[in-house]
Length: 380
Image 1 (cartoon, rainbow, N blue to C red):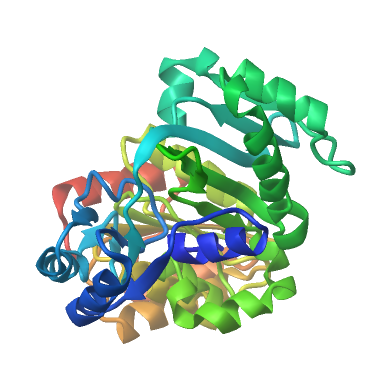
Image 2: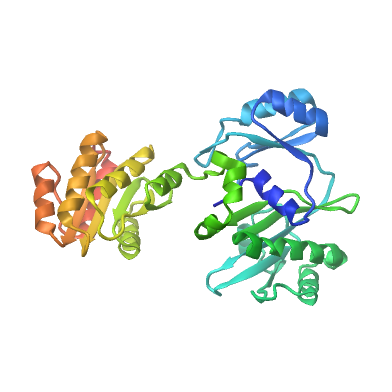
């Protein structure tokens, strides 16, 4: 669950971290009202992805008319597949320095890692690639959290010794997002040092573990539908499907995470790009398969679909019925390739053939076939 910037900042404020005053605006008139109260503002698109500035989703407004025009331009803008529903009008800061501070999960180390860098305002992945020595790291004890002397050393290692006292205090507060909110990522970039010497969160990113969302119902109650995120993942969750958007143009359905991931690899090897990961699980009935296809076909970027099913408790005839029903109900016009083996595979293949769908002989041949059809722009 990725919070929008203004939501993440409200959480940070509850932890005692200073944030600039700001107001949410959904219309130009609301932006003018925010300007009247706050003065010059940064008008920021609220979407759960980075790169807003480069996409034109952040504008500085020094007058009421500029605030009005900025909102009119940003609302409805598409940023990496997300339509901007609202903006955050935030009091402009008098910036002296920009710093990066963030916690995330280091999956290789199987631990939380704290990152601090004097190169704030940049994409931290870019800094890690181009200037790896510019990032200081600390793996805090998960039971005690980061200790003062560790944080002081970390800040000095990052070349920020003159800010040791305020940074140490702020980082300890930021760390509370992990135990208190089950955060996978808690990031402030940039952490702004103003010309008056104040340290303020200029931007904020907070991602909460979906598996612990039931412990944070207050966030859903507070923010409602604004908290949705990727529209296809949201719809899949409503249908009890395991789904991850990947950005390609070939829809993928499989039963079991391992089979799904190997199918992604086969499509990549064949020269294609997967649009998604969709696991229908074991014992999937026809209705589940139909739901999976319905979600995948919501994405206008999808040019073809590959279904790879190995039947254990999942029956091939049930999967085949779901495929045929979904194709007919959804009026599917895209190329569809199916690889099926295991329990009742012959019955499933027969159902497919009777309805004009030729099942693939192997997973590799099926992957090659869907890439070929997608590239050729073939319609079913």
